Length: 203
Image (cartoon, rainbow, N blue to C red; front, side, top):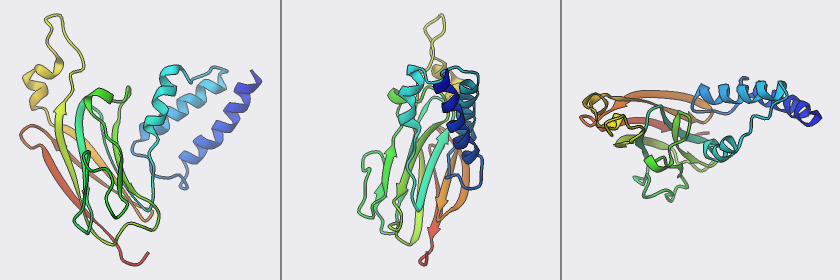
């Protein structure tokens, strides 16, 4: 019991920090809410870290740097994030590290969807290495993921409504400490969207 009390006290510091202006960028407020729920369990002398939670934790810890781009969405689908840097080099699922040291560290596909939304893909440049200039963000719909089956053996994603329904997403860009958010949709009819941002030469 004393261990849970001490853990709750320590975790309270973490949660307070996440909700402060000093916290690093996190791609979705649901992540903060999740940590608040862990704290609530600890304060009630319950251990929130089940085997399922422990298995998920390493997959939802995203690295950051001077430049971080995070794509998140909340449905069962394989969306792909790509970035083209000022040198023309492109980071994507099949080219995860480029010469400017930008790297893709999280690639979500149908076989490794996170148990609880949001899904997230993350690209970042370590501190002091992102080249100045213009960057192009690409968001592409690769496929929808089969998630459930009805009594007739039909998946939700086999229905016309599911196929035609646009998938909402957001892209959060943490650029030299400044946060910029882009939102959009992808579908089979319009599977690709692009956005642009710039890294200034003096930083």
